[in-house]
Image 1 (cartoon, rainbow, N blue to C red):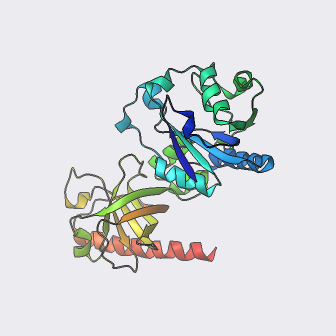
Image 2: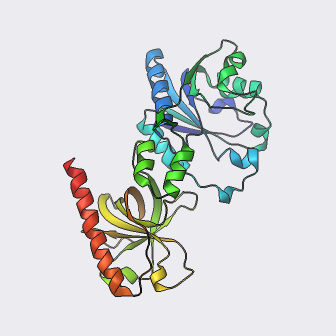
Image 3: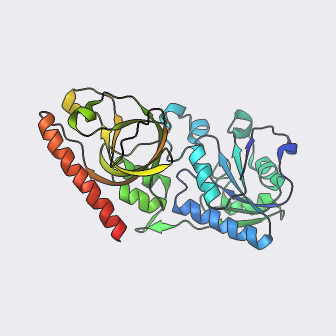
Length: 316
C-alpha cells in the first residue's frame, strides 16, 4: 500500500498515474460504519478495474475548524494504526491530507477540483454525513453539482446499532464508561492502544504479580480506569494478560494514571519493546485497599477471572 502526503500546494507529479475509486472520511476508529464505506469503494474499484484510494486527514478537523488545542484531542486510532486498518480493508493508496491554512480556507469547488477530480477519481464514495468544508455548502447531497459529471458520487447510508448511528462519538462514550465490549461491537474489532514498555515501581513483582508498565502514545484515548482482560502483541507473540488502568491509590493519593499489565505465563524481559494492547473485557472498577494483603487476594481473583474469560471465549 502506498501512503502519499498531500500538503497544499502539492505538486501533481507526486500523484500515481491511473484512475481510482476514492473513499473519503476522517475515519477515526475505522469502525463498522467506516468499514462499510471502504468496502463499498473496494467493490466499485474492482468493478471498474482500478485502484482503491482512501483519503484521510493529518489531524482532527476540530483543531483547525473549531480551534481545539491539539493536546486536547484524543484519537481512537492514530494515523499509523488507521493505515494498518486501511491496508487490511484492501486499500492500494492512502492520501493523508494536511489541514494547513491554505486548505482550511479553500472553497468547496476548488477542493473538489483538486482533491477529487484532480486525483483521477472515477467515483467518490463517502458516508451521508461527509463534508469537505462548511457543512451547509459542502455536503454529500450537493457534491454532484461540484463534480460536474467528472466522477460518480456514491453515498453510503450510515449503519445503525441498537437503533442509533454507529459513530466515533458513541465509541468514545463507551470507552469513557468502561464498556469496552460495546465499543468493540461498534468497532468490529478489539479496541487497541500502542505503547512501549517502560520501567515502573516494581510493585507488582513485590506482590507476586509482576507487570509490564506501558507508556501509551499520548494522542490515543484510553478506556476508563479499571481492570481488564487483554491480549498483548509483544516480541512477535500474542500474550494474554490482566491490565490495570489506574492510579494505584492503595499506595498513595494523587498518583498519575498508569497502565500495568500482568502477562499470563510469560516471564521474558521486554523493557523498551513496542506493544499493542487489545482490550477485551472490563472485569471490575478500581478499588482502594487498606493494604497489600487485600490487594493480593483481589489480584488472585482477577487472574482467575481473566483465565476463565479467555477459556470461555475460546470455547464459543
